[in-house]
Structure formats: C-alpha cells, structure tokens
Length: 114
Length: 116
Image 1 (tube, rainbow over the protein chains, first blue to last red):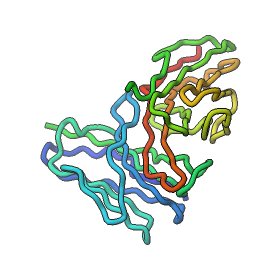
Image 2 (image 1 turned 45 degrees about the vertical axis):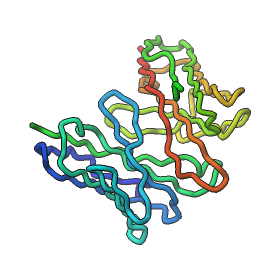
Image 3 (image 1 turned 180 degrees about the vertical axis):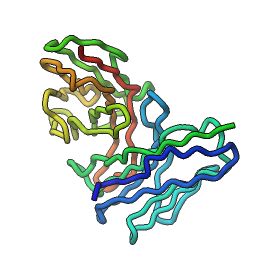
C-alpha cells in the first residue's frame, strides 16, 4: 500500500458545484495532515491544515478519520479559480529528524468549467 | 520577507555539465528540503537538512549533493548532469519545534532544468 494515495482524477465540474477529494494514508502513527494546492507549473502552496475535529476555511472543509486513515477535502460553490491539483500531505510522526519530512500524495486534478 | 527564493528559474545543461541550484530562506526555518517533480508525478525528496551543518539523503539522492553552512542557505549541486535529471526542482523550508510539527512547508517557485 502506498504511503499516501489519492484518486488522480481529473475531476471536471461546472462552476458552483460541490466536489470532494479523498485520500488514504498507510502509517497509523501519522500526526499532522495538510492539503496543498498546486497550479500548473507552479510550486505547491499550503491550502489548509487538517485537524482531528475537522475544520473549515470559507468554501473549503477538511475532515480526518484516524480510525479509517482517511482524509477528505470538500469544496463548495466551485470557482474557475479553484482549478488546480490538490495534494494530500501527511507527516508520519510528531517529532523531528526524518520524521519531520512530509509525505505527498500525487495529487487530484480539478478542472472547473464555466 | 521574501520567503523561499530559488535561482535560477530556468536552466538548460548539456550532458556531463555541473551546476548549483541556489535556495535561500529568510524565515529562520530550521528544516530545509530539496524535491524534484517529474511531469504528472508526485514530489520526490532528494535531500533534507534539519539545521546548519546537518544534511541527510532522501528518496532519490544519487547524482546530487548538498551543503548547509548557514540556516538560510541550502544549495543543491548536480555533478555530471544526465537526461534523467531533467525535472522541476523545488526547495522548501519548515519550522519544527520539539513539540509540534503542525506547520507545513513553504516552497520556492522552482527551477526548471533540462539536460540535453
């Protein structure tokens, strides 16, 4: 099983749609979780951290299910500007050394159409 | 506050040439990383550093070297460039305390390298 797995997509949705991305991770001891956004030919940028109780930032909602080792990102009222690749990212441990290295999924591509 | 700065943005190398990709950060982050990203693929860790004077190999270190003489700078050296090193290279930094790793990476804008 890969460390972080995501559906590669692409997800093609109309403006205003709600879209959900899922991600699973293999290391049950993982401590920190993030969603990054990467635009074409650009660097990844932190979209939001994912907390155990779930968290929301405007149109974006992240959920974590530790028992199932599953993370999700929900985007409501999709905008054209949401078109990008969304990377699921996991920190395997909660201390430094090599465990401070984030593990990146390959990303899910989203295309929002007019 | 510039964040993470990478130079150059683009470079074409001939097979066998060498070059250094520069990375500097002004956020006083202790951890720094070099990743490569091939088209349609995920990020692969080349080298990382947990502080000045300390470096370690990542997933794909062959053909590369790094140094970390200061907190701010983390250059990546390519020796004897090969076509397989054609990729986009991202430098990143992160602040980690002894009790929390709840901070994500800050990435530089990348260096697009082509080896011909």
